[in-house]
Length: 227
Ligand code: G3P
Image (cartoon, rainbow, N blue to C red; front, top):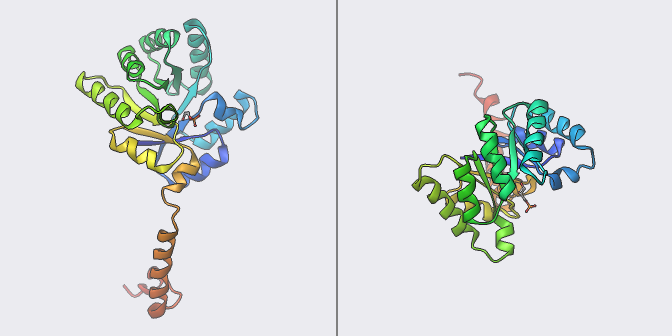
């Protein structure tokens, strides 16, 4: 199981990397546009903040040939272990097939259907980014679709991992994980919301209060000095 951060905000990457067990950073052109800097400048900041975590970077070309050229440039700039995110349409599938032949690592993206995921897997994609919330917006049962994609990969021995994406709340994340998704990519706010809870804060402060009643302000490491 892997958790990715879905952002191009360098500060957010640094903060979340300190706290959470992150496996990498995913971006797309819309996420990058929020940072209002040119692609290469912002990606340098992202790479620096990620300090070694794998990056997933999306291409925008409309033909397989253009997608291949973008992938080559990304690998050259950010390293061959950078996952090239390619939307799953006809040209995208053609590009995925060719890039896998050349040894690239690929995240097939913009997946709304089992059919897209099936073809992405057959083309050799390493990850399939399944758009959880966007499916729900279309009244598609995203939990069922995610579970079906996970089982079809397993059933036919495909190594593609489901990377569930496009989350708006932490309930959706848990649904995707319970549907079998092997990885999820989350905006920082959704990740934070998994542990931001007044009941947790209350429990922590009650324990602290009871500790202090007996031991005062000293911490455990400060009272165990005689051992
Ligand atoms: O990686 C991008 C994917 O998570 C899409 O998210 O919020 O634009 O539906 P969203």
